[in-house]
Length: 317
Image (cartoon, rainbow, N blue to C red):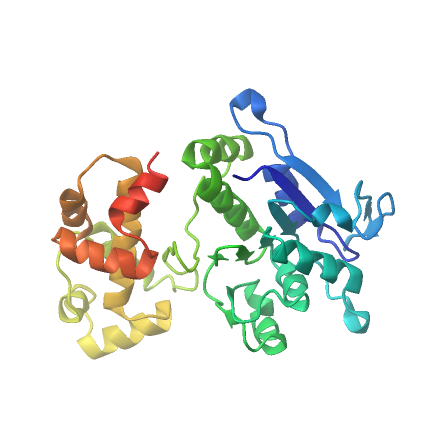
């Protein structure tokens, strides 16, 4: 159960990403039926301001000792501290909190703080696409995924830039407290309760933002006909291309093959149906284009990590 949340602030703090954490976890919404989080803002010294990246300061009410024992320690984006590095005292406190069982959540470049504390070694993670190569260079054993909005690796959740932090925070609330609580918070924030993102266990594959305007209609058509059988040859005919040209263009535009992309989209659609309808698994399989429940279960478990039935029990509205 997620009850206590501590946010770590250091010099170079980015106000927007810090504000995201405050908005999700720091506002009392008990009047709306949302459990209230015991929210603490923690810095190297209680009452001593830390500098933000925009010429203002934030004064934490708590020191680093308040990280220890928190159910969640959230690390917003921080600007590169340069040669002086992040506060060793803060890194030690963050590592100790993780060792004691806290979930660690980072937003954007907050992943670099977690990395400096040794929390990314051997783990799946992400950060803003502009900084992903640098994160991978600094932490060669970390598995940096450059193509997702956030990564859920159990007790470590990392997110990409800015708005992706909203997705990661809401995902964690959803994972720990359920869809109903998440929906209330999201409505108050006027954001979708589950924007298409990506993480190791529950991965979404939205239409890629880098898709060119000329190719987007091809993806739109596939999305509207997920329930139909598809091959590269039939898709190429629909696009008035040769199969070889279509396959090459598809990989260039999306970063993956046509059939893998379609499978990912079908699983994503199955997730929504499992969450939002009471259709049985066989009917969900038909709607998504898998045809049989057996094929749906195979791909769903491979991509999402759990069976459709287990997923529904956890996430159905």
